Length: 330
Ligand code: SAH
Image 1 (cartoon, rainbow, N blue to C red):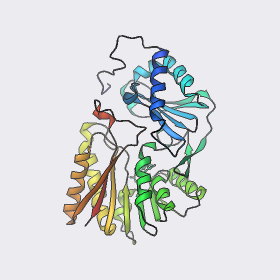
Image 2 (cartoon, helix red, strand yellow):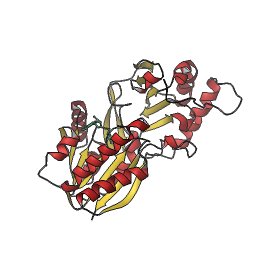
Image 3 (tube, rainbow, N blue to C red):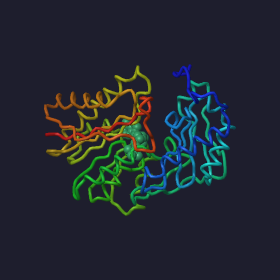
Image 4 (cartoon, rainbow, N blue to C red):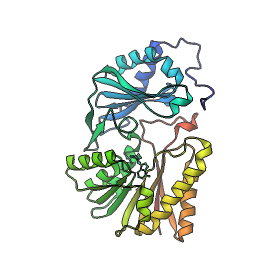
């Protein structure tokens, strides 16, 4: 039932053995050496982009958390796992393969220790901000590494005293970067565990960010009293298949449409789509429709993509999944 007819592991006539994966993982780790500074957490294997289709591995200060998304890589586990341990020399390896996509490959959901001993959580650093990462119970592999550069850019651009609404905040990434630059921040997430984690992170960094447990769609509509200089919209991947593209478009339209009246004059929205199905052009088009329906002018000030440890091969367009449109209302 897989959506993928084939997965290309090699175009050469070569054995698919441990040595092959050792070479690939070494190249993958090497290519990231200078890419992502100021942190001790990075994605070291990103599926097709690193010629390991269906395998992702994130390194949190030496603790690797990985996901196996394809039957191919599941069947080759005894081949690539020793290669990964040899090349990355991790303190531990933990698998978090609990995503729905596994069913399509005929694979059950699985989580468990593969090597060493993984603690419940660890603390990582991102541009001087500390984040607790729940290695065994967080969303995905515990942290959204892919938004690092966009969070950092918000930290750079926000001004002291400005107000920021961080919708879909998870562990508080955008909030904390903005708060560290002197902004007043409010984060919203539907999961109590996320709100709790974000609050612990704010405390650990000594910033006064506020977090609330709520459905962001409803919260935006409930008419909060304050208005904001910035609203971050970072919803989860609503559309994984082409058939669901319209529902994602509609969701983004709703979020932007509900955000516009909450912005101060000249306020900004960072609208993110982490689904390949909604590309950059359609994301901006959706924002344009929402702005038009509200009767406001809107400017595109930039687009940021997934950070560089999630490389996007030009020959594999599906690898470019995360786009964030930086929008300002006139
Ligand atoms: N911005 C975060 C990552 C967001 S992941 C970061 O930089 O780390 C998406 C988050 O949206 C998850 O934490 C999930 O719990 C939350 N979520 C999903 N549906 C939601 C909804 N309807 N309202 C609010 N939060 C929601």
